[in-house]
Amino acid sequence: MATLVLDQLRQWRDEDRGGPEQWQAAWGRTLQLLGPVWPDTTMSWDGVIHADGGAALTTALYIIARDRGIAPADVHRAHVDELFARAPWERDLDLRRRWDARLRAHGHDLDDPTDPVTARWLQLRVDNSPLDDASDTVHIDNGTDHRWGPGFIEGLNYILAPRYKDQLQF
Image (cartoon, rainbow, N blue to C red):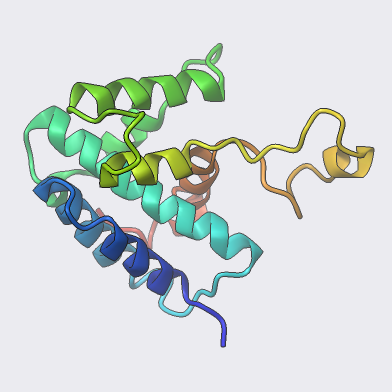
């Protein structure tokens, strides 16, 4: 039987216990938001991107809540879009560095994998792009069968896509 994306997110939430209260609240908010959108989506190839997107949304809700001194439940889509926005000249690495800085500012040591927030972030910031010397078919494919870029960017791009805008209400 295939694993549901929501079950994977619940497993990660449970693994991340012991983090700050706002981190746990961010997980709860993510599951509340995504539950109606993906009630039966399984962990197929794109389900992995869904799961990364859910964990990235949790991270965004947490960062924004800490930045603004509000509860994750009070974070709006516009706040997430603002945190995720890039100037035209910025690259994936610039966005990753900015999120790294926000997490450090909130007291997370990015060299400490025992910190639940850091552990999840270290997973999400991995660049899934194929190596430069990968076969031409991988590069021509342009992501239809391959992952491209950091998991948090790939995942948030997926779940914040226009196709989910009406379903993902926050």
